[in-house]
Image 1 (cartoon, rainbow, N blue to C red):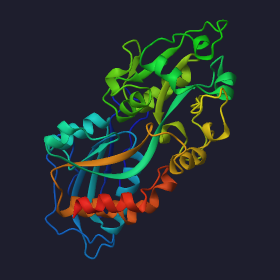
Image 2: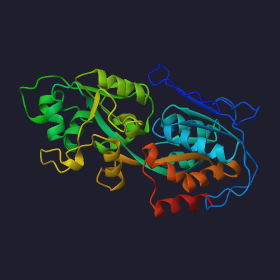
Image 3: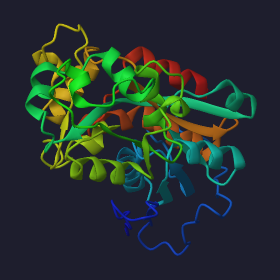
Length: 342
């Protein structure tokens, strides 16, 4: 099996993984090639594959779901060595565009599916849950105050949507703090930006103020904020916390959301580890948005290998979510997604 993972801070931030079956000779397609499909019947909805499957699946987009998709593809291919995967990360907008254009079999979309997209043939199922978190540089002069007091939802709105707050002193009602806020967002179409804008009182990514500095791709945004002592941005759970150690990525801290606006970052509002963040999302203590569903999109209702793979993700594949930093669907949510695939 050969894996070509993306370079986290490269300028193009295009992630590609080719999972090739042992002994296979068919090359995995690129996003520009039409996807290959299998005419084999889908597996049963129990999640147990009763016969070998073969074929190639091409999948693109959301940075948020990319790490999980590589795990799922690896596990699925071990069950079915004659399957191959071509997986690319490039933002939720790319996933939807590629899926609707028929450039890939499956698009990863880390936001709600819009009515205009379903009208154009988008079929989707939710497969996992995660969340977007506000991040600031660990070098921020006000870091101790940020972690002790948190930032209220109203203050986030005035930072990201209305632009009323331009200094860190305004955030905490302290005129002595005159350092300017350096605001960062995504320049590419991103589910994280959509979800964060909704939490802050907007409707979509475009509602984040024009003065925000756009960064292409999630890894680059995290890196940029970490290096700017006055920076603030947002990112997905698995980009905020190191997947190996479960600790915060070096150079950043999660800015606690002071949900109850009591002027204190309560213990269940401040997350220092991935385990704490996952528990908050799973228990419903972290607000929604910015917690959200991760969705997989196809053009029209899938069949064959695509349908079998989605059914496996929603059944046997759910067991791998926690270890990869995602929150499994509840039994009711799982059943709802499976029902759509029947």
